[in-house]
Amino acid sequence: MPDTIVPVIDISGWNSGEGSERDRIASEFGHACETVGFLQLVGHGLSEAAIAGLYGAADELFALPLDRKLELGPPRPAVNRGYAAKGSESLSYSLGQASPPDLFEAFNVGVDVPGEDDDVFYPDNIWPAELATFRPAVERYLGELAVLTQQIQGIIENALQLPAGFFTTRTDRSVDVFRIIRYQREAGEAPALDNQMRMGAHTDYGIFTILLADQVPGLQIVAPDGAWLDVVPATGAVVINIGDALAIWTNDRWRSTLHRVLPPTSGNDDPALRRSFAFFHDGNVDAVIECLPSCVEPGSQPKYAPVTIREHLLNKILAPRELIASTVTQTASDRLPV
Image (tube, rainbow, N blue to C red; front, side):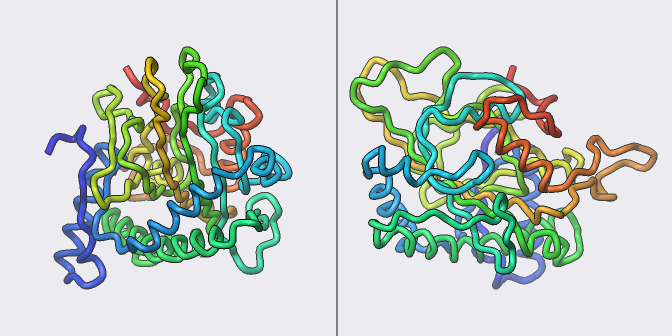
């Protein structure tokens, strides 16, 4: 299978399999992270009922009147909760690059961490009180994602030959954010501006992302040869991609891959609906991201200076919302599209 293809990996045998089966899964996972930075998982254990409930809840949320959705927005830009209107962000600023506003609307939910009262990284969630099924549907899906997240951490530890539980003390209070995203062209909407995307080119900021999405074209990644590559989710699969934190930990042995979502094709009135659900597993705010000893050659220096999750995330989150160029570590600067 060419390295420019995002592989589909069956992980159903991870929990029940013998050591050889686990090693096979971890080897395939690690190869994808080294070559592409994106992969797809089947056998992930997410139930059809939870997925269907999530889609229904999201459709109800975005059908609310705009003035009501705006009331569900965060109290300030650094708070990663609640509603974000279309055009309120430009993700390319997280790479230090200016571009027109992105053409998506989103709603953010955080995972509750008992005992944390930081009102930036662990704020209270904002729930639409009039939608009785929204919160239960989201929390059911997040509960199933928590199991999958632990599986993926175990696979990563195996693939990198780390001690079992290496990530436990670095993620037991993880800043995990779930972003419900809707791309829909409104009737009579003007064509996209030059260089305007549904979501601008960016890398993800944390450890890894789990993405559930409609089988609708739009998502593109920068392939190893530098060309943009279309990625449409396989039936029943979730898409996984590596974030900046894991790229720094592995000294870029694993790729935090640049990706974007294209605007719909002009010239027709198709609403071009695309729904996606991105779960960002980002790590504890006080965790230090620094090169693993096994990922640097003897006599060489790591590519990146150590940085805390707090410092890295805060700059990356604010840049697209305040339209300022991010100043923290960029892991894709040598892998921009050709």
